[in-house]
Structures are given as structure tokens and as C-alpha cells.
Length: 152
Image 1 (cartoon, rainbow, N blue to C red):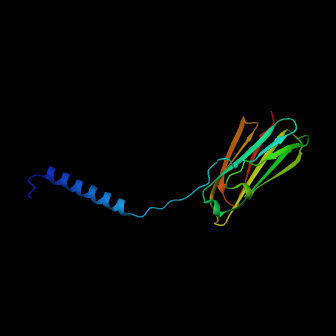
Image 2: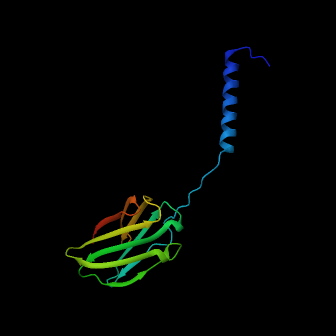
């Protein structure tokens, strides 16, 4: 096969490069990372006045890499816990919630700490107060992610 002009040569070269790239990509090994998503492992703390705080976390690691998830809620002095609901899921046995009453104002603080076997795993913590005030904060496993709310 003879190529008689530069345009045909460039087209043929581009087609060959594209075909080689497709063969290379198709033959390359693939890596899949499992991640825990925000689904049904979100503890909800209900208070006697009907208010609630819900927390969750997204972890960039497989569930087998997660050692524990610690949630701490600091509440106004007047708040009393009615119940804590663990919603189940793959991380349910690795979660703990501690409620500490003692803030002098109407403020709330949630703290989320994720401990993993591998260090520096990306995590994002989510908190909501009464379903309307929402916050999220990203960091790494081993760090305590702190979010503040004002009761309304």
C-alpha cells in the first residue's frame, strides 16, 4: 500500500495510534477500590424534646479496613437523650455514640473519628440537626472532624 499525500498519511497514523491505545487500555489490569458509602449506618440520637441529631460518614476504604467509628455529641445542658438508634449495615458493630451535656449556650457540636488499619484514609463526616441544619467536613482517618450547630 502506497500513501500518495500527507493528509492520508496523517489519518492513517492517527488511526494506528488510536488502535494501539485501545489495545493497550483493554489489556491493562484494572483496580477496583471498595468504599463505604453513606447508607444505613447512620446513628440517630433522639432527645426528650423531640429534636434529633443524625451523623454519618463516608470512608474511602473497604469495611474490613475500618476498626471503629466514634461519634461524640456535645449538647446544651438542658438536653436529655431519649434514645440512640443504630440503623444497621456493615459498620453497625464498629460504631459508638457518646453524648455529653454541658454546653452553656444553645450550641451543638458533633465530632467524628474514624480509625482504620491503613493510615490517612480519606473520610467525610456528615451531621444534621433536626434534618434541616446540615454540615459536612472532610479529612483523614485518625483525625477528629468537628462540626458546630446553633439550636433553632
